[in-house]
Length: 272
Picture 1: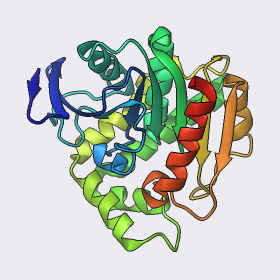
Picture 2: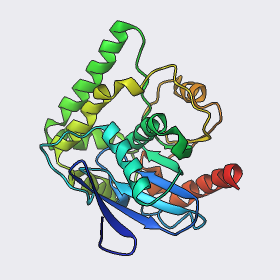
Picture 3: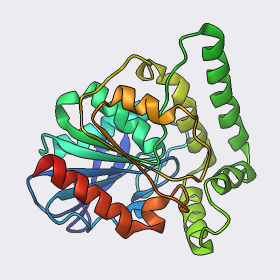
């Protein structure tokens, strides 16, 4: 392991150099997991917000300050394993996981692979996948995700997708920052990550269930399926669900103090 600053660290795993940051030294831990082509920078307002917890934020391989080898394969399962590796490196036995966008799907893989190492989970406008049981519906679902990945062949595809996640009155400064962070990730890596939706389909079973405390915070930036909340409730019976009006997909950056308070209240309620 290399250390470049007091709270900034690197470790090597599967030929990836993983960058992560730590705030605090409390016995209980909160992990911040960014979404597709994101980075620790999307959590800039959360890093120092939870003073009673050790906060760990990770740049997943191919993102942020972590290594970016365009010849490697990047999957959500790999990312979940990286969370485990950071926990092991820091001798953290368990933590509360907060996942933004695709980061939530990564957290869902983590709790299936390492259930004893998670005390709870938070979906920050998170992506949640359920593989249809009907064969034709399954094929259609996988094709949709494949087509979505192919739309990322050009930078225009990336920009069009990200613009779908904003509202008309989303501050331009926020839009520019999100796009800048995303463009630090080569498109070939972004496409590889999207393709892992199919590669990791064994984790998207409809009949899975967890008794972990679950906090869900969503924005109206894009239309969710009408039964989305019910799906989460079925998998996480102990769920607390919030909808924040008039904010974009990057709600933890747009209304950070409101988001931080919701998370703090949930942590206090469940872990005090």
